[in-house]
Every structure is written in C-alpha cells, then in structure tokens.
Image (cartoon, rainbow, N blue to C red; front, side, top):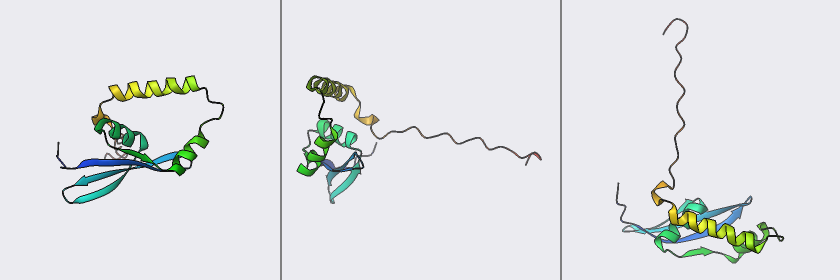
Length: 114
C-alpha cells in the first residue's frame, strides 16, 4: 500500500446531471490541493468515515428535492436512511473503487494450427 500523505479536506456534491448526482473530493497534500471526480456514494461514504465536511449547494438540494416523489412516505424514507446508515457502518472502505476486471476471451487458433 502506498501512503500518499494526503487528506480529504471536504466533499462536495456539485450538480445533478441527467438525474444522477456528481461529486468531487477535495484532497490536500504536501504539494497543494486537488479536486477529484468521484461517484457520490463513494465520496459521501469517505466523508462520513473520515469525518470530513460534506457540502451541497442550494441548487443541488433543490434539484434533489424535485427528484423525490412528493407522495413519499416519511416512514419509508426513515427506513431507507436507516438501511443506508447500517450499510455504511458495516462496509469496508477498502472495497470502494474495486471492480472485477472482465476476463479476456481465449485466443482461438485458426484451422491450420497457427
């Protein structure tokens, strides 16, 4: 494992694009800061795990509110929030960003055996 000597300064949910949230990680290191694009779920999980500030603009929050059905049952929302919190308590942060690589198909030899 490599130590980057950096820390997550904050996480910002920057916009809603085509119904999907977009987030950025603000990372500070010995050579300054950098902003990294991130899946919102990963960015929010990191912010919670690292106790980093989490920001979203009023415009993002307004758009997010428009995405939620106005007929949403408050009890159902509370249950979903509870499930998310339980998941975040159990998830291993090292699993974020890992994806299984697709297997390469076997190379087939032609009929002449070359």
